[in-house]
Length: 185
Image (cartoon, rainbow, N blue to C red; front, side, top):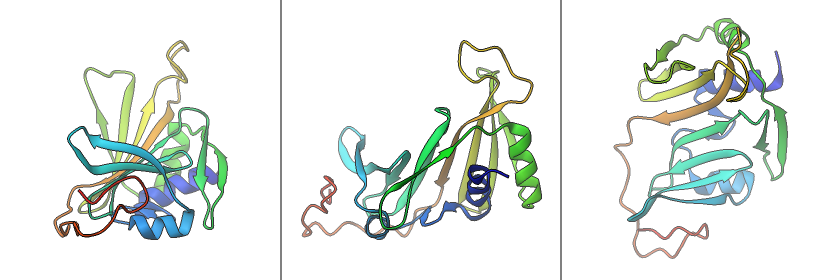
């Protein structure tokens, strides 16, 4: 099993990659991995939720500074993941559907296959990690748009998100900007 395939299996079974997991604290992640890059607002009229990232890991945080989702864009063929203490590690991200299915099966992980009529060249393996946490592995039938269809589909991206975020406190409007370009409101 490749190192990246092991990381995908970790994501599917635990709902996270090391400390990058649903509901993780932005200040704690910044202390572990260094300051994130600022991905900007998600909505035009509100600063929160707000996008941040480390390496190629794209994240979205709620105004309470808890991670709501993350995305791993693996179609490039490699991915930079953050290391504790700073720095990045580059992994080869070429994973076929058969290899992913074998790894998930070996880990005792179940999934649902989701397809869409308007996207016949794409399907998603969706894993329920916990009642409110999902991981999705989006597969495509070709390496790129101009390539012919493959017999063994390839991973295009991996996603983590949560459905329930009910214990979110209101932001303390007396706090200054948190240093990541995202004021409390």
